Length: 71
Image (cartoon, rainbow, N blue to C red; front, side):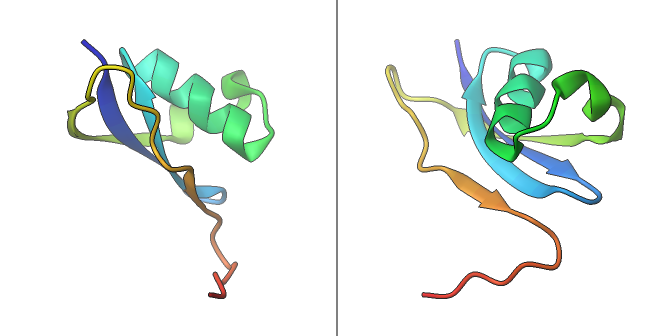
């Protein structure tokens, strides 16, 4: 069963992704950030937000440190 993860990196910020495990979560977050997952995996922290609904794709939530979101 896939879960929703919040992946946090000290310089890249945070990203909410749906994945089966932490490896899939860091891979999806790295893709959102445009970096290689191998270069960031050890610095990432993971928080399980809950079970993903079947077929769920989360709204892309990516925040980079030092950037403000205008709305």
